[in-house]
Length: 143
Image (cartoon, rainbow, N blue to C red):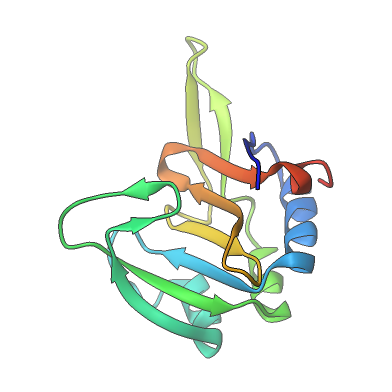
């Protein structure tokens, strides 16, 4: 698959993105980069659909040392997408007063998220705290 970076802009784009992803996603991976928090609203909503929980040092877009981070693999379900639609966006790309790129954190927080197809290939994934989002070229055309 060919991948493109995508600039995340506003809630309307977020809703279009989720609508496209919902059609093709088999599983969602959520990585809590700041450590496990089972009381986080997204994790609470996802728990009934969790297929696997593990500690990882590498995930889409990220490799890190240390003790790793908890990753939840979640069966894609309408309930998960309904919960995600409540957020403003995963993050918003912006520019600071000097014209430099910056990331604006939203109510989604700093978790990284990936949407995978039936073959385990990523359709879309974020490195949230750094403001990076990657999507397949084919899906980018549909947003």
